[in-house]
Length: 78
Image 1 (spheres, rainbow, N blue to C red):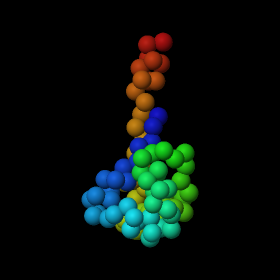
Image 2: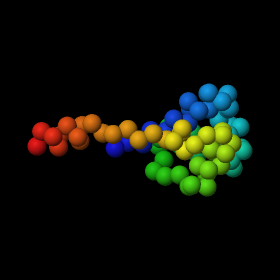
Image 3: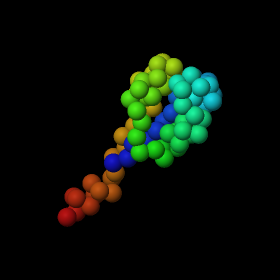
Image 4: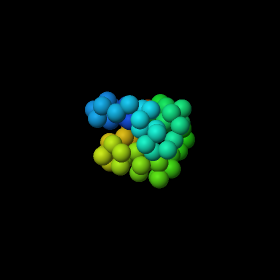
């Protein structure tokens, strides 16, 4: 299983710059960049809520679960 961060798409759709979002939610631009790239192991619900409030979206608009098909295929063939 993988969680894919789609924040770039939401930002582009809403024509919001990353620096503006970072400033509005109170995180550093570098931390926001790490989040956008999926290189973080977690995010505070408080931060996620602030992002969603600012962008007028739902967490599911930003995060997507993508099943790992390789594991499923291995279990079926076993």
